Picture (cartoon, rainbow, N blue to C red):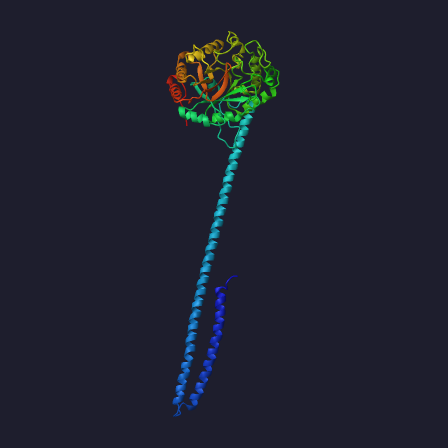
Length: 493
């Protein structure tokens, strides 16, 4: 329950005081009349002295009431002043509250105006971006290519508003003025953690990123856009088998070369090419690599004259040209750099080393932009292995140069720590790149992983990484930064 207000208390108090004052005044009048009558009758009487004394006594009796009345008036005045003061404070508080409310309302109105203005600007930017994207898409459909002439494009993935992603013209990429330095890691270009961590140790940022994709996947535009957003050439190893297929089997009958040639994957290939055109950025495609080996389902024979995966001699070239022609029809070859990359010949079956075998797997200069090699310092080592670049690569390079004059990229390379000769091999690798006879080698991509594989029936785990040991890392840095090796030495982040 609430207490009475100050004004209510004051009203009750004043009502009681007024009644008391009226009674006091009536008594005073009556007493005065009596005294006047007595005075008139006996004042002059010789015996008036007692009466005069009585009057004095009566006056003394009235005095306390007058003093009390004066005190009551002072109390009333103080109460009135208190009420006025409280009313003033209440009025001031109400004024302050109203002022604060008005200020808050003004601030809210200002904030609403600012938010509306920002939304308007955002809508304008979205409209401009949509118009630019529509214009770019229309240009791509009309010309069959959106990046081959200018080397520019925009991200096809993301949340709507992105900074346009650009790339050099395809012609400049095919014939670069400096060499490519690339890496394969666990997740790049979809995650740069390991890629960037290794780059930071080397001190030089790679300008190429390698990754793998299978034929059970649609074109992953984000791999290309994420690579070019970092200024890196994407090189996709495109395997005609599921992406998660193991390396312990070369049998995948649903992906045989005759099925591809016969058109079973035509719809997939046409859509894939269209998606590349829609992305509008260049990339290198290493299609069905190491075809001269016996470990993949796109190889033709097993070294003993038997078919692998139902394939026939001559099917590999037919498959390559079939895929290439579909891309040509869709305009995708204006963006794609085709990389034909066999394995080094050192450890192949004898039937796969003979003259003419590798030549018969080459699709022709009209279907290839770069030729490449996969080559590793890999145990078990033969007695004549001197752990040099020439031992690993020269026999295969000689064959490539006899087949074509196309630029050469060492598309997948690495060295094992087993045996302790990795730093020596790394030093030899870079020294060889500085020799004039290897000027046609436009770069390499290092397989920067540690994995377990079978080689010649032997299961082994090899650490191929650049930073597998401190001395290996030092040899790599010293070689990569040699001016005569012509790498683009962009500092790592």
